[in-house]
Length: 282
Image 1 (cartoon, rainbow, N blue to C red):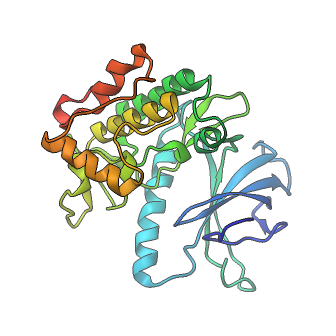
Image 2 (cartoon, one colour):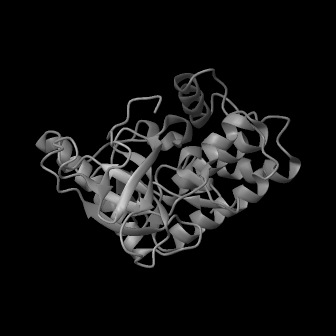
């Protein structure tokens, strides 16, 4: 483990019928570990991913917010069983007063992936399988949108790669069910993948209003990155790229796609990255 984990769990720790093995990844709200079956065979795979979420610690306000994120993710997993979405097998709650930092934690038992698109791009900025992976990501988004959900946080770290090399969408704690044309999500996002109309959008009591077109913008950014190794908007930092997105949305700057973007993808990416959501491809 080379970085602080949001939820540190010792190797060998037991939860339910699973034993924690190596750490996989961490984020601001939770940490993921390899899990190995330690109890009787229940028909589930012998190896899974265990996502620990610290619902037993924190202030009441933090816990309320975290519970909302968990409820979003669990609800989507329970209702949608689609081939391009990572599967959830069960949920557990840690009951261990001897480990106060873990006591009360929620654990999602998930399908185990081989890696992530983020890790792949770190080693191979323009992978040969890029177009095929992008097609599969499109399938996942189509499955979500047809079911009436918005992902809300599409980025390379949330695209998992399976043993056979195929892609699955994951990390649905920002996902939201549509209510007509909009859904409501917490006011968190990854700037590089956030459409201009949401960068400074009003935050109401239910969060920020979001449309499926936000996922389409994020896909356009992701496709440009996978196919060229660079972001479609200029800037050395996420902040400068955010400012470039705002200038583009205002019409004071043009979209300058990389000359390395294959011709077959140029129109697709351009149609994803329109200035307004109304012009964006579905």
